[in-house]
Image (tube, rainbow, N blue to C red; front, side, top):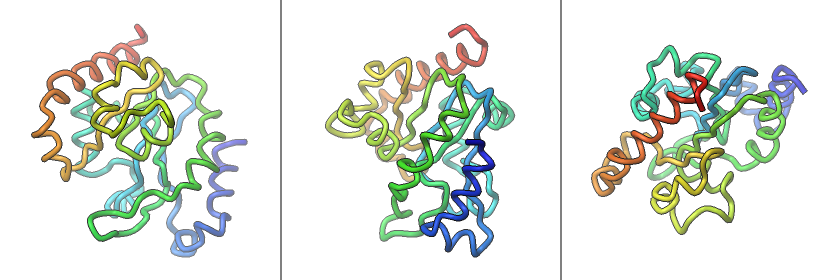
Length: 194
């Protein structure tokens, strides 16, 4: 199945009809050459408006954590597959969670179009819970602290949202130890030395 086929299926899926009627396409970025896959949460309102994944403050932070600039982030070497391809709407304390059926129904076919992925960056709780399943730890903090347990296939990190500043303050080890390791692995993969 091609990406075009998958997009048509997504648009025709009755569970996405509100978006299709409004002319909102699914937001993701895939490439057959991609070496690094980022699995995020779901597009926010700003991303839905621009249709560019991580085109917000979270994206700026993620690029810093990965040690790459915008040009590399949006190059064919990097793929971005959110847990939901549409903005799920506002909840009481932030955005609503991604709808589960998107990853279950559409991720497998999309992953088959990217045979060169060497590392999947799991951004936040939803991606880590879904892809690590029973291998995840008691909570996201423990999962991220144990990131070496999931290498080389997966690299779990917290969400780079500006709302996570308290977590980062309480867990300085993330920026001190995990981010440099992430940058090192990203550089090695992009340079072809991994």
